[in-house]
Image (cartoon, rainbow over all chains, first blue to last red; front, side, top):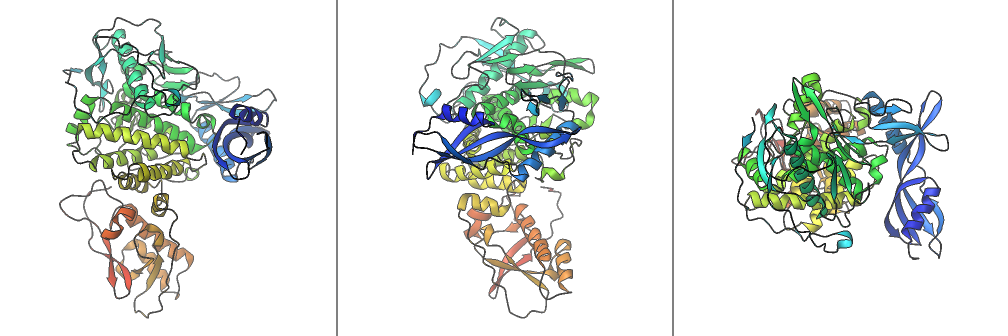
Length: 131
Length: 505
């Protein structure tokens, strides 16, 4: 098993659209199990897709030098996508979700849909609240 | 009015694990400030009232203590460290500082490499503006003030609220993936962890341990100042939206909420019902946790204040390790629960924590009974259904129950002997010789419900694996409603009594 260079691996996975990467365990065959969030279109509002960070469990194959050779399992499961869509609905109904341009300090707001540098509308948590 | 409580002498406590810093290295402690300050024990309010909380005296906290240092950024300067009267800004500062330090001290002893996600130090704003709320974001903690019925409430004055928000920051420090994950259960679990942080941090106070044991007569599962979270903030919210909170607090860890697929729940609901809104749904896990905690205390020999301290620290360990190893999937709560059971079984087998924890998770529906058994006794024994060919004059079902760890592969249920719920399956049996999958499922559902509610008497040999203990079960007499009896070559489910008591649990 090549030595895992954690920071390099996280940087490489970040380039491929994975966020909050954590290494779970080493697997046979130069593979490692990684958990991360991936931006994925889960919902449509006003004809435009809303992307959300959906949890995925990846199996990353490394080459002899410890670089990413291949990735399996990088697509969220249908259950996870459904969960994310329902989550957006819940946030919207309970007044915890605002969109870009709306007052960010609105009472009870925990999430915002904002446009990222690639022009995608992305659900982002801003904070946790106690109620 | 707040009652002044005399400072209690330190009690003999179970030994704490050695404080560790990053990578497990021992961290030298700074010289501790001298003197004492006044602080709320857990909240300024008591029950349904906005006042009446207990004032205690505590050593002056050092927020810069490593690891997990904290800085109160607003107000910018600390008032003189001495006992100040409640109702003053100085008192509010020190009660918040004390809760922050106590909560961070509790968790940092359990984390392998404690450090804040927000940076080297956690900034705290004790009065960020007007709101009946408190926040954790990746800048720090923010507390507010708001008015209700002519009274100004400061959320940062409540140790419950402070340790809830601190819990978010701590969970974010060792499982940062959860912060942004778009998942109902993940978000609800984060809220539950905040409440669990408030409960476990409160239990680090000797005076609270003594107080709650006295208040509940040693039966921790009863609603108490420990289970009631944020009484004063709950009161303030109740003045304008009564249905949004509990009648006597913001949320109560003693509850009977039962897990449901959040996809089947409404997105909002009054506090009396469950919804998929994260704070609402969080109560399922918190309820199971609290029941497990109470059961863990009940397994100790002394059941006293020192035992309660040890149980709280063991529960913290089980939680942290369970969360760390749990996979982040839509059914995250069951993942954490199963991991916690496995850790309890391996790390704390001598203490016998597994059974009460399992009971809590099963009784709140977070784990199905079979899944709970599998979590600690994997691999699950293969189901073995031995279909009976013996003639009988009664409609019956042969149920496979191997997965429940009862020591028998299958049982017979006589439909005519069972009450309403199984009569449905029995009546359906009358139109056909073999039960359909749906009928079988209904009978199984009935059986599992008995097990889940702790209403099935489990044979002694199978108790450790399969018994679900009702926290409210009387100790002086049996109160099961059903048992498995050997009748010839079959194990048969028989009702032994009808319970008309008022024990809704």
